[in-house]
Image (cartoon, rainbow, N blue to C red; front, side, top):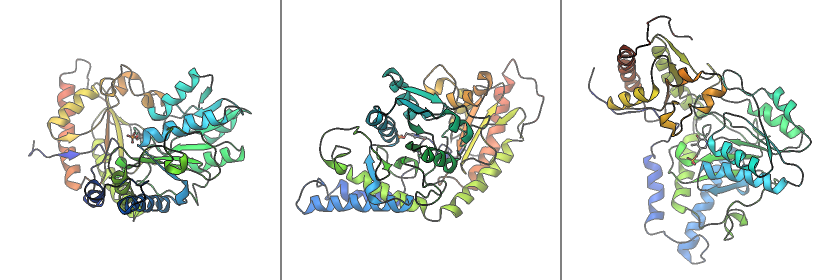
Length: 396
Ligand SMILES: *Cc1c(COP(=O)(O)O)cnc(C)c1O
C-alpha cells in the first residue's frame, strides 16, 4: 500500500472548524467578553454580535431573525421542539407522529413522552428510508399535536419529501418540526419558498464547519411552544442562559460560508462521492444502503457481507481513514443501527456496514487513496472469515 495519509470521511459526525470561523470567534474569547445582557459598551458589542449572527442564520434559511432561537446544539433543539410542543399542546391531544429512523435526539424524547401518557406513531419507511406522504395522511388523528420528521438521515443520507410532508401537516393544522441538522449546508433550504410549511427546524453549527456546542431552533411566528430552559430573560424569554457569544458568532460566519454557492459546492462533493461509490461497487458482495439518488451529496453507506463493521473501521483507522459504522459496538449499544433495521437490512448484514461522509476536508487524492486501501482491507478481513465464499458482484 502507498504512503499513509490522513483522510477524514466522517463529516456527518462532525466537521472541522473553518479558519474564517475561528477568526470571527476569537475577539469574543479575548477582549470582547461582555455579557450581552449588560448595558455598558462591551455588553452591547456582544449583543450586537449575537444579533448579527441571528440575521445571517435567518437570511441563510429564508426566515425572519425573530424566528431564530439559539440553543446548545442539535440535541437541545430537537428536545425543545418535541417536548416543548407536546407539553404546550397536551390539552388538545397527546398524539405525535414521527419515524423510526430519526436521530436519537428526536427518538428518545418521543420515548420519554410515551412514559408521560403520550402516544407516538412511528411511520413505516420503505427500503430506502423514505416516508410515504400517504402513510402520514392515514396516521393523522383528531388528537395529533405534532409531526416530527427529519429532513435528511444522518446514517444513510436519504432526503425525505419534506415539502409534501409539510403540506399535509399544514392542511391538518398540525405543527411540523424537522431535524435539518444534516441538510443545512448540503442542500438548499428555503423557509419562504419550497420549505414554507415547516414550523420548527433544528440546526447544529458543528455539522457545517462551525464550533461545537451551539445550534438553533427556528420557530415560525405564531407557533406555541413551552420553554425548555427556564431562568433568565434571554432569547425573548424563550430560552434562558447567557448566550454563547463566541459560538453564536462562529455559527453565523459558518452558515454564511456554507450556504454561499451551495448548489455548485454540493455538486462538486457529489461528483467526488459518485466516483468513490462507483469504485466501491466493484468490491464483490457489498450493497449500498439508502436511496440511490435522493441522498445527501456527501453520503455513502455500504454493507459488506461477511465482515464486521467494527474491524473494518479499526483497520481503516490504521490506514489513516476516519469513517463510521452502524454495527453494534461502535454505537455503544448491543443492537445494530436502528436506521438499518428500519429499512429492513438483516442484522448480520448491517453488522458489516460502513458510512463514509465526504465534505470540505476531502479532495480527489482522498478518493484515490480510499479506493486503494478499502478493497485491500475488505479482502484481508474476508480472508480470515470462516463464512466467506467469493460469489456475487455488488448490488447496484
Ligand atoms: C448530529 C446530529 C444531531 C445532534 O446535534 P448535536 O449538535 O451534536 O447535539 C441531531 N440530529 C442529527 C440528524 C444529527 O446528525
